[in-house]
Image (tube, rainbow, N blue to C red; front, side):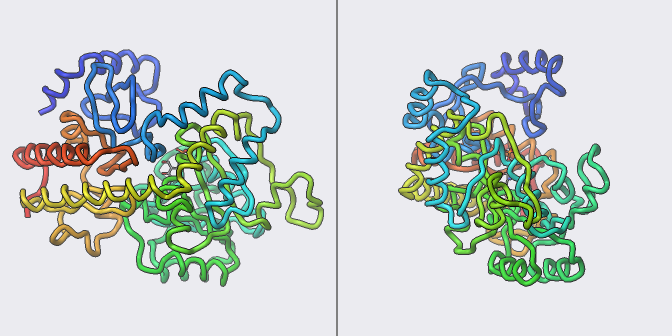
Length: 445
Ligand SMILES: Cc1ncc(COP(=O)(O)O)c(C=O)c1O
């Protein structure tokens, strides 16, 4: 089945062989490994990208969801091009970072203060440090399947089985400071009541893995109340939902305000960067001019590239466009059309599964238990437990026909995908599902 895929990508195949001698496994992130080999890209524009062999793809990975405005948006490209000859790193402050932070304050309800970092993972490191310092406690409560970067503090709970670390190399004391529970209010309450050492509750307010596993009704408000009752801080990881779910992210859309928020991806218009935004009181711990003798102490944080002028310039340009709400509305409508069209294909081919998702996302569940296209009561073990061979086959079948997923079995739309792109993608999906069904790679109803 993958012969055709390989035939059309000789250059990617050769580059992969070369890469294997320079990069462990030929990749720079484990998520980029792919079957039969990863594709190498060389150009992208708007909703499309082209690989090293000249094949064109409609892109639903969109820079791992960092590019709500599509590839090479002219205003972001211009902002970076204007800054480049003026210098890329001054060691000291810029007006750019002040304006960037002010725009975050204006959009994100919890952002009384903003500290820029270099990635979502860095944002988690800093958010946990601030939460521990602010509360004098040590543990983090997190939820099964939610992803918060590749840092030590959350390496238990990402993958099935959710109660085991998924990587060696992390101190057992660090793993023991992580409390993982199912994403429901009763389980969270039980965990908080039985452990007075929990400093913070963290979650993706979209549901695990940008909505792959939806949250129960009222969960955000329940967690807000539980955090207050038990004296823990509430952290929203809005690395994906930030600016995408609404101009103010998931918290802007759902009306629940956390104490601290992690931001990255769209924050910088797709350049490297991130931030922790939060209430003034915990964020004061990062203020080197404050008298910390009467507080828990000063929280140490640095970063050569934090708020670098290129990322700041791109971030300002992006946030100015996000503020209108127009890109979010357009991307949401396109994703709704895609979900509906793909869902119809599964029903037509009598395949067990469903296509679902919030905001400008789509998630393709291929397994038993979904009813009439809805995932009903399926939980993280089912929704994140699609057999790897099936995931790989779907990814390859779609790529072979010119559509690229974000990761696993889902993707995101941007504000620059067209109605024709969506129609074409539904045709591609139809063909791919037919191929998988004919080869018994997916289950029939
Ligand atoms: C919800 C969430 N949190 C944190 C991260 C980590 O961000 P980064 O890859 O910038 O370190 C990601 C990355 O995809 C994410 O999706």
